[in-house]
Image (tube, one colour):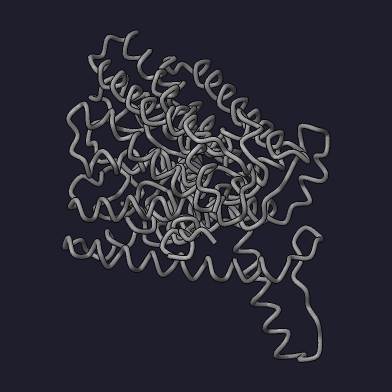
Length: 480
């Protein structure tokens, strides 16, 4: 294992986090919110630890193997989470709560322990939003974009951090791919900020909402979340950008480069669009029949909550925990699926679900026609058997962790609906759940054990399980 290079990258990550902490520091100065020293001390701590790690080792070998990439990503995210919790700790938040809120931000989960986000200082409000934006595209992807010479084999870093079973390389150089992805990311954030401001949302709200929409995070500076604005224009702007944020960013790149036809050929994109349409249609019909809602109101409510849950953003417009059981079940299924691979959304990912269904069909065909050969294809290209196997292993690990987390949360005497939906929300990086963690509630009532368990589950979900599990193997830490 290339330990020196891994330590160097961790140091680089902490230095970048120190620079990011200067943003809420500036916000604190502008608004005189009283949390200035929390960000001064936090930035200083990140720099004091990160700069020596980044510079003290002379790296002889700039090569990252697959194992190195997974270990590096896991350790970087753990370091980011612990140091990112410092502003909360310096403003009086207990340790477990500070770690939970930081991990929820960086993993773009959006679950919160704060009952009243609007009562937080402006600096903390901005830091909550910025952590989601940092984690949405991936902090290691940012490093690759800013420091192209971080090491050969940097594609292994992107594979370990980027969501989805198949990584798309948009340029022969990994650093150029990272730059393209971040260019799209920044452009979408700026576009939504401008659209919300035109719709009448204040600048601070527009910026923080855009940071948490494009990252599919869901933190809001308002206690009522998006319902606070009481504006149909704001609702539909956010619906549009949530849907786009859950689309594979590679397809957006193809569309911008004039290859829209190639983008539309994506099986995952077509499946994503169909799931959206059918979910909105069924939930709208259910709301009209069961609650007597009007057509437009039912479509708006259904579209907003379908978009916010399939993209795993987690914004709130109304309390869907009070909706009919059929609608709640559909929303729960959307939390499982998540958006497209290569997006900022969480969940299992549509591409994995497509592969799982195709693998099921192949097994049935083998039973009926034992001598026939049925390769699995996606977008006209054959899916390697190694990828098919990894999808099945991921699904098993996902369900196992979900059930284990549910069991631990039940020790807090949480009922099954609360414990299961909180665990699902954590591993899918959604935010709200049902019951005690519904869209109008928060996670503050859980014990420290449950909060730390949920924090670990959120990290497992964001990094798609394997990088953290790799750390448990003793062979990883041996030199050979």
